[in-house]
Image 1 (cartoon, helix red, strand yellow):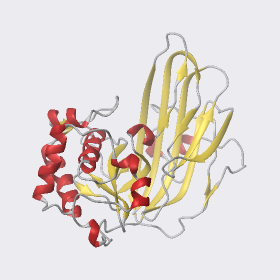
Image 2: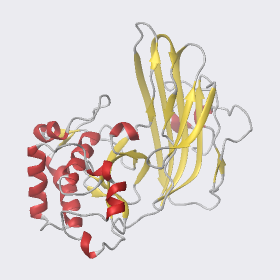
Image 3: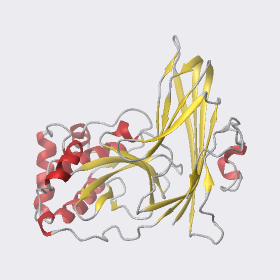
Length: 330
């Protein structure tokens, strides 16, 4: 499936502030499940500098830094991504990985240490995980599919735009949560039975019940012979070609699409964002080469809807700063 994505974010400050260095994890991941065809970033005000790097989980990240004071900071991203995995179960587990609790090989277990431990699980969370494992006859893949279905069926889905995820115990007790709350609960219940799990942020094909699109969160579990595989408890399904991954990490903060702070006496901030996604099949002539560019022109979100221009044109009428490519997407 082909995803054309435009994602615009604007931070507004109540008085001029100095922006500390900001990390962007807005470049869709490239791996066996998805291919990045085009990617552009525009930023206003113009950063004083930037660097691209690979983070701890292997994702491409960008750090920006700024000079001077500003009353707002805007980031616009346009990406075209082809998702490739139509069957989320196209793998074969080795015999010693079929039953729970899973025991990873020595070197693999050491590499997954952070994903296997989120601290001592709450007794209620551990008990719930054991119950799901019991209904699954202690088998690995049935446990994951049953856990995904159970959370989806049992918990009310909320849209909560701000704040850190609730703890697994809080979500379990409330019987409700946002997609990020449900992903954190899913991860903790996986770890309770020996499965390495991590938090994922990205986009999903489906709109929210209110007709808008928001950043989405789900989970990935590391399976021998299969690698990291996605499960979306908020949607109740195993992840195939209808999700686009931005970043993943042990903790939600490690997968945050933007991460930064500001300095300003008595200043506060608000965030407005807009996401537009169009999907379709790969068309003849969709190129495989593009460049990243940082630009400084930003059309106001409330006066220029993102869906008024073709998605393969410059987002929000922004113009690149110069013709020098930062990098190329192969």
